[in-house]
Length: 202
Image 1 (tube, helix red, strand yellow):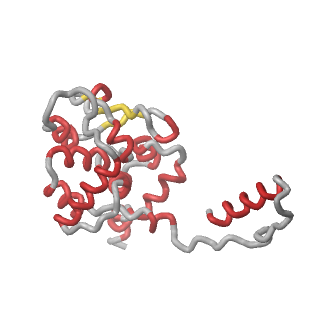
Image 2 (cartoon, rainbow, N blue to C red):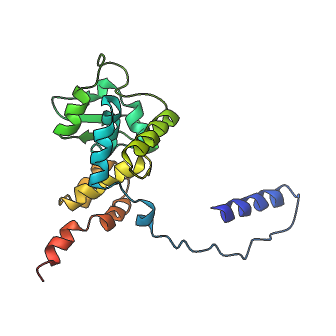
Image 3 (cartoon, rainbow, N blue to C red):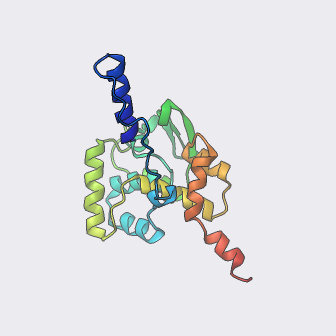
């Protein structure tokens, strides 16, 4: 990323005739040694359970929107009540990544948590700013002694749990709103429970 930026800078300088130098033209980028799945470590089942147990109703709703609904934190914070159907157990993400919309089905646990949120069901379901949400999760992780991995690790939890329970890559991609199956394949690294069951009797 940095190498590409520096090359772009020198290309612009040469275009502006500010220099003729091209000092990084033959430099090769260092190959990334960390596998994609190692950058996406999800929270474990026990950690999610501990976070939910220590959260108030609003934070519980936010956690479950990410951990069960598979929403990105930006999607969860901007979710409106008009896009939630509690009886039908589904919601609509209006402004997903790249401006895409998608329908998300959810289970009883998330439905119950949303139904228990105080206040009138209008405007934002949870709302609030991203920095405030991050600070709340940091404090919750501290109280529950769960390592802080950010909200995206809750989304990874949703993907890996679905795969571990036998969902297809297509189902997981649709639930998480992935543009390509290749992105979803990364979650398979963390969902080897099914594989363990299959080979345990060999």
